[in-house]
Length: 492
Image (cartoon, rainbow, N blue to C red):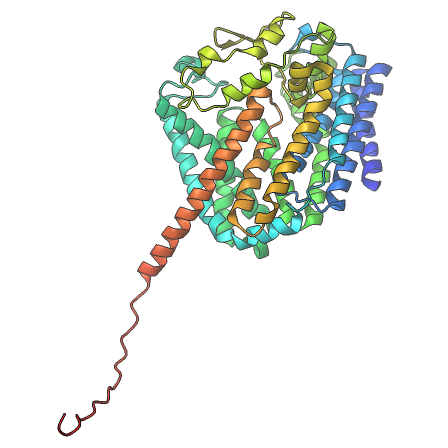
C-alpha cells in the first residue's frame, strides 16, 4: 500500500509539472492521472504477488513478461499530452485511447492473479541453481562475449550497417545476402543477448552466489558496455537500454531480494520523468526550432508513444468496427517460425495475413517485401488481429498460462542444468514486448535455440576444462617401496 500511495504522489506531481508547461486541458491531465492510477495499482499488485508466492525475479518468464509490460504501460501514461504523430490514420480520441489503456491494464492485472508457479522457479531455487553451476556460467560468459564480438565485427566488415546511419541496410541490399551471413546475424543476436544477461548477472549478483571476483566483474562490465554500445551507439536502438535496466533490477535478486524490489520500484517511479529529460535536453540544445510547449508535446509523441501497448489494438477495433481480424494469422505464424532450411520457399507459400488484415482498413504495412509503416505491435494488437476484442483479452492470459505450464514441467529438474538453461532463455525472450504473431513464435524458437546451444556449450566447456586441468597436472612422483624377497623353499 505504501508503494501504491508513493506512486500516486510521484505520478501526480509529474502530471502537474507537465500540465503546467503545456497548458493542458482538463481532459488531458485527467486521463493522464487515470492512466497513472491504473499503472500504480498494477505495479503494486505485481510486486505483492511476486513476494507472496516467492516468485523468482531471475528466471520466471511470466513475471518478466508482466514486468516489462508494466514498465511500458507506466511510461506511456504521458501520451495524452501529445498527438499521434507517427500514425495519424488512427483517428483515436483521447477517450478511446484512455479506455483502451484501462482495458489493457485490467488484463495485465488479471494475468498477475494467475501467477502460481507450483514447483518452479522460486527465488531460492534459482539462487541454488546459479550457485551450483556458476563455474559453467563463467565459462559461458567468456565464450558468449567472444562469439558475439566476432560476429559483430564480421557483420561490420561485410557492410551490414545500422538502419539509422549512413551505412544503412538499404545501401547493402536490405536483406541477408548469403545463408552464411544469416548465421553471423544469429550468433550476434543470440550470444549478444546471453552475454548481456551473464554480464549483468556477475555485476548485480553477490559474490556468495556468483563467485565473481574483481577481475570477472570488470570483464562482465566491459561485456555489458560492448553490447550496449553496439545496440545504442551504432544501431541507434534505445530499447536495449531499457531492457538492461530492467534485467539489472531483476537480477539484483542474486544479491538481495529487497535490493531487487527497491531498484525495480525506483525504475517504475523514475522512468516516466526520466523520459522527459531527453526531451528537455533536445529543446535546450535548440534542435527543435518550435515553441517549448509545442516541442514538448511533439517530443512526448515521439518518445512516450513509442512504448504504447494498446493504441494500435484500439485503433484497429475502432476503425474497423471490430471486423479487422483473421484467425489464419496463427497457423501462418507457426509456418513462418519453421527454419528456412526445413521449409525452403516458405515466403512464397505462407500468406502475409498481417498485411491482409491491415490492408482491409487501408493501413498497408508491406508492399513487395518493403516495409511501408512500422506499427507499434504488442501482445494486445496481436490478439486483436487473431480474434478482435476477444483476442485482446485472451491472448495475454493464454501466454501467461503457457509460461506457467512450462514452469510446472521444468519443476522436477531444479537441481540439473536443464532447469536454468530452460528458464533463462525463455525469461529473456519474454522481455520482448513489441511483438506480433510472427515474433511471438520466433521468440519461443529463439528460446529453444538458446537452450540447446547453452546446454551443449556448457557440457563441452566443462569437459574441455576437465581435460585441461588433468593435462596440466604434474605427474605424481613414484615412491620406491622395499619389496621383501623370500628365499625359495629347499627342493622347490
